[in-house]
Length: 398
Image 1 (cartoon, rainbow, N blue to C red):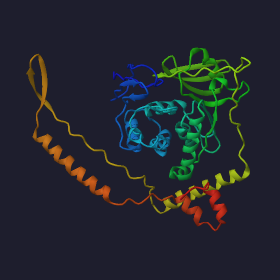
Image 2: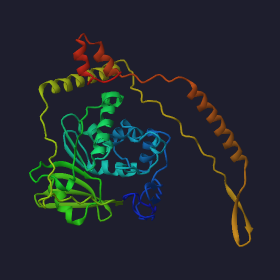
Image 3: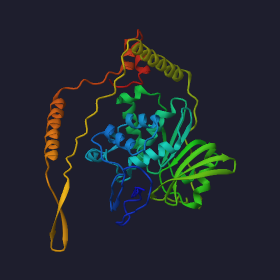
Image 4: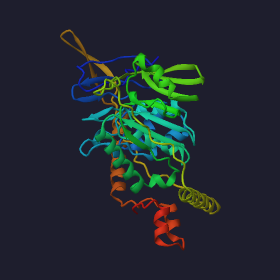
């Protein structure tokens, strides 16, 4: 059994302490230390040099297990959701918090995405939607006919999430590679959702749920739906099997900050929060969806007929670390101290590493061609008015 010291999502104001739990996973070891004012969490997987490298590590540790989840993680660069000056930590398996802005560790998000068992066309509710990072990844799987709602306690975080969403839609090439269910965010306490609100196929809560609120969460779920939430220090998957029946399964031992209790108004009652409406798409929007789908399919068929494989963006090679063998020990006082001894094999490995680094450096100096956005090129080549082309491209920047 591998011992995994598990991630914590508790509030930054908590005293210094370390949590330790067990989970059977191959080749992973995770250690957590929480510091006042800032999370410092040792990852369950190695740090990556970039987003793709991080995803490779999550796959290797079996946190990401399905192709749809992998594609969503690769399409959304985690670093884009960090504030300037903090991006260096984006590809470590660490939780991050700055003021009200918070991102869970990548291993937590990947377990959540897998446990939700997302499919196109489903409805999703994110309780504590934060930066919108998770909701945006979910939207890539739900597709244009899903429902993607989020509720967040802090208004400044909702504004931050909307800015990041707008940036993704306007500038990311990933937007043109998927059919997207755009998230809609509202400000409010998720424990104050109006009693007549609609139910959802999939729900995730990003804060610790007290036992008293378990049934409140379950009622928001449709029959046959899946709810994932941390309760009693366990990330739990709950399947609603009937009107009054549920099945629960513990996924991972965790420690989250608890849900903030709602304040009462002057009348001694709670204010209710209305969730976004489940709006039906208009004909103009439907036409855009199907035109883009048709063009995308045409491009794929055209490339297949020409025998051209779609290339993935180039990835940086991992740098191999030199490991020196320990084969001698020295007594110093009462201590037994291992001493590394170089061997011919070590020297050869060091030379190989140097050659690889020199090669990688020379390749990095070559100017890289930006990846082609074939869908955009096809739209812009159509004999259509410029205003219609802009609409079909969602008014995206080049």
